[in-house]
Image (cartoon, rainbow, N blue to C red; front, side):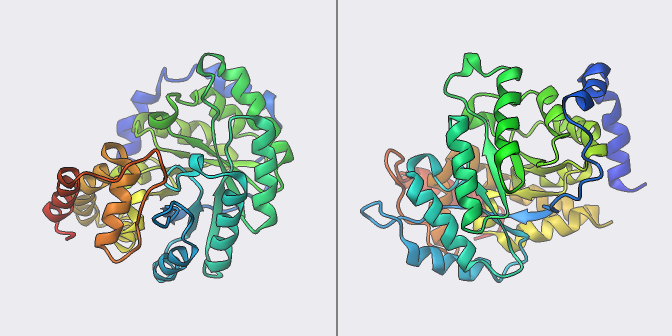
Length: 334
């Protein structure tokens, strides 16, 4: 029995009750069905590239070019620029647009560039989405507003994303990262937004594989594409129907993450499982445990430029750096 079919049967019972049937049935009343709309194919692996800085915290565009030349040799589908790993919240608007423009210029002709455009206000998000489209981004990834958490209910999310999608000249990818925002975008909201013709998918970094499976199941008729937000659960994400991943670990282990992607779609589940297990430890160190500081430190070890962070983030201490290094060594990547 193919692994994906097996996982589907195992998870089907877990999906019952996660959504009320009327949530799915009523979703079509919010937007007209988008199944006839040919959506941008975002399947594949993307590194969410860090923003390189000089010692004075200015953007090191020469180092960005250095990294891009190396990444262009790896079979990525494209790049995500100005996401969480790009320290986007520490850049001003001019910087965010310029970094996107440079990545578009430096990316290989076959690479798809997705730009983070999420801001706290709907108005700013729309403005930035339009600006990054002007400099060549093919889609935008929009993190949810989160500062006024108690006011961010389903109605607020639906209104925000609908206004952005209505006015963005390029497709929208929802971005769910509760570890950073403190908010899980409600599944009912995702199901409704999946009907919008300009909302084509979601990056889910939450790691709840049953939730992801339920969303794949509930949005299947809308050609809604869900991307794993981490290499740490890439194999199970593919098993339940995700189409790829935006994986921080791909910044330094791009070939390995792309290999895991291919193995996950093949019949060689044993090899896929072995590689997935090797990836879990290092991935945790450069994402949830140490975040961007861990990411940039490890990039330096693999021949990329990681470099300094922008304040208030601090570089790893020597003891923290040793923990990260040991994780890569234990998995035989160093």
